[in-house]
Figure 1 (cartoon, protein in one colour):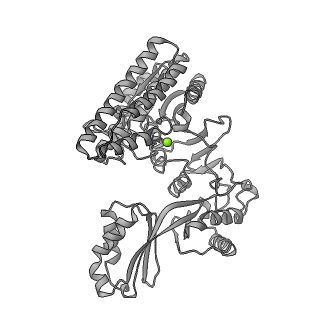
Figure 2 (cartoon, rainbow, N blue to C red):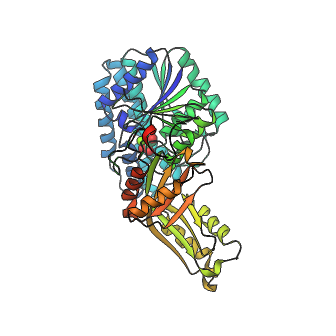
Figure 3 (cartoon, rainbow, N blue to C red):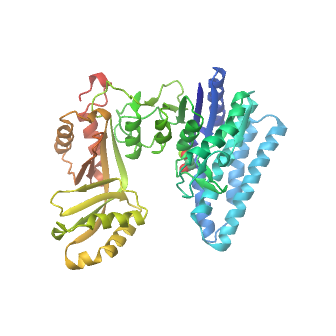
Length: 472
Ligand code: ASP
Ligand code: MG
């Protein structure tokens, strides 16, 4: 089999963790598989880089960050690369990359302007520091390995901060660069999170994007499986912080995985499933801290024997934007204009609901974007506001709770159980939405009601029990 395996930040967070990651990659190679690894930055490094860039843009640049980053990676090199020549080579590579980082920050501290393009160049450095170490650790354990910058593999659009892969070009480059290594029995270590435009300018795929990188590389190589090594046992029926008795799901479908990732389950970056799904490549989510656990397998079928609701999630840090007014009835175009504004502001809409009385349209976006969007809506709909077609446009912090499962589709009674459980728990629901895929019912509740709502639904669908015992 050809397996693309990704190690997340905590899975490469220290010398010990990198040693473990190297062992896991080598163990699969020893079983006769071809293995490509994709690595995140060491945990916390991306945040540190972004903070340094932001400070530099305010004119505050000190060399401590470089020293701190060098020190952290040097410690790993000292622990994992016994051969002095190889250790020096890895550290020189890291130093060169930090040099570039420092120059960029220094420049920023002079010009005081942090563009998305510059931010990508800086925030993508963490993966470029980690990959040479992971590769050297594999090499030091006796298996051939090379570090490869994904800028040489993944060709992307120019959307800095959230670039999308151009798959034809990516496929060609990835195959040309990685196939010969795999044929020679080596394990390439690819930097997650980054890519480059056709002109070679570094881009990032968005925060948490290394999962997406693994899926892109997997699709480009027609891999047999994509493994995401993280720090939990897999996708769970709920966040254990909300529901202590939450369970790991052994099998879920691509659509369930993407609904769950989109609706706040933090295990997978929400775009990860897209490239894998297109080619029907199974994705496994595994725990590098508990590698004997079988984790969660994501495939086309999922678990057909499982009942309606499979998992319950909550998204926090979101706001409900409401446009209301009795004069909106029958006035065409208000909805279209409103969503044009939202799109112009680049805000991502998580759910939408409009009652058929047309007195009220509401939708949910990230709270960070809410003040900007409300202001832009008030400006764009000024005439309707002054004429009284619209009475007010408000933004209010809320939480969205979602019940997700493929077999909710066509199973009657699910909505009754959902609202019965919330009613019994005394939780008020402000807005509701069910996509016509019927794989998801989402509800807007007060911020403080998120955890009790998740617990009430988890209990009502008996998700703490193994599937055969749960109710549909
Ligand atoms: N290092 C990047 C981040 O922290 C990408 C990732 O970890 O997936 O967002
Ligand atoms: Mg990460």
